[in-house]
Image (cartoon, rainbow, N blue to C red; front, side, top):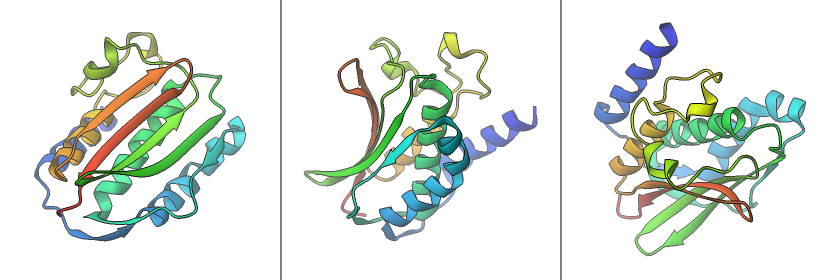
Length: 170
């Protein structure tokens, strides 16, 4: 119950806490997340890949940490035993920065690809995995508050990529 209460509070704060928009070096955020999850990555033999030149963007630092933490946590929980690689990157798309996290684990069906961003939605086969179904709802909420959106693409040939965009106009 404590985990549920904490997740609900995080979800509410993702909707209501004021954003502190400042220059954020994405490479510093990914380094913190990589260090936080280093024990799990190491034990499971999962490679972490990222470009050397991740950009600086205008965003809320805590939000960027929360988004990437949720995406890595989900990859470790749901991508299955075949997961061997997590790739973090950034691309430009018109008036947005697009940050993404790709994993080579289990594939998400097209029918679930929108549903999993809804609050309290969980993938049925993952009922044994701890969580309350708010992680991706928080990712989507924070992306929208940054003038962007969140989505997933998943295929056998390319793995699963969670992306979120943030406006360059912040």
